[in-house]
Amino acid sequence: MASRPSCPHCGSPLLKWLTPVGTSWGPHLFVCFNDDCDYYQRGWTVMEERFGRKVSYRHYLDPSTGATGPLPVWSSAALRGDIVPETDDPQGDEDGDARAE
Ligand SMILES: [Zn+2]
Image (cartoon, rainbow, N blue to C red; front, side, top):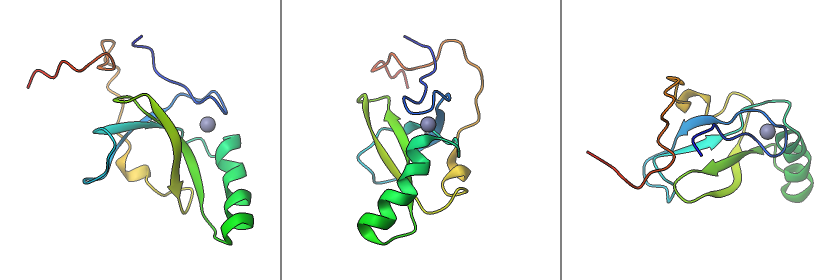
């Protein structure tokens, strides 16, 4: 179960993204940062039609709860600064509530 999660909408591997302080999420999420993702592309239209706003959202998976949902973004570049670089650790840490700190 340590394989990298992929986006159910476009199949791209999800990137680890550091969550902001004070959210109800875990320490990081897995987020689809593919600009060609159908979900993200459709988001612009949906949000404009529904709310008249130029925003969209990206698919996320919270590995600490298994929850998925939309992560709001206001541009293609938004939130990319908090992507955690992959270290290619084959162990991963997805399995865990074992926090040895
Ligand atoms: Zn996607």
